[in-house]
Image (cartoon, rainbow, N blue to C red; front, top):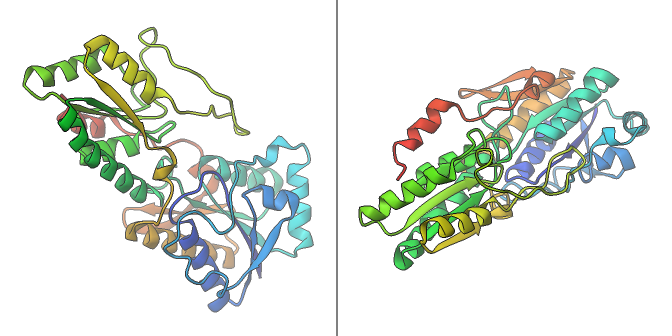
Length: 343
């Protein structure tokens, strides 16, 4: 068989580990040829590709990013997108395609399989950990380690200067990074997209700490957070090809509002893309490798339209369309655990 592979959406620690696993088992065990498409869905649209070999993927396990490059290209933004992809897959004599990505990349993969009949398998990755049908995605563990270390470092400068430190982390629709890093880092307030926040309550918690002689506070906020309607203004950005507004800025707005309302010196730190970069943790290297192995096994068995998912400690195949049917968001009971430590 000849199998294509691409990485789409935001880059993520563990992508190279997944690519390496697909190539290693695909070639060594099954004798398949593996073709890598460049820059996400742009690759099969523009037919930019390269042959992947065991030698060309040697040493990439600990590397962050993706050797194939990535983009947020949406194949359905072109009227002839699906037809062009089919034509290019056929011209390369490919039996199928493995798409490694998050909500948008795998949503396109599911649609290409269900509506266009293309042989596609998905692999779940995203630091946001918000894909349905899987308990965890690779990239998340690395992201929360980076964020937690940053919060630990900010604690010392916050305490030294008696400041309120606002730490903005990633998380468009789901607050998993904010919740886990904030809880691990001892944050005094954690704000997540699932629960619109009350700026008055945030300020009350900070004032309560000051009244007890704790003259610094750490506020962790996910980039997709929104205030309760009418309580605070926020800015909207431009949209990408999947209709998502470019996020960022809630940290600075909170910095201004907290200082204005409390009078306490406040500073914001936006972790941004540092959460997605760098070497993956051991956990993410192992998880990405396991998912890559499961993906090439599924391709070998021609289990198209499926995605390997984490259920407990097991890797099991689920239907790709089920994986993107809904987002995995933070449940109320998990947020309530963190609320115990607020203020």
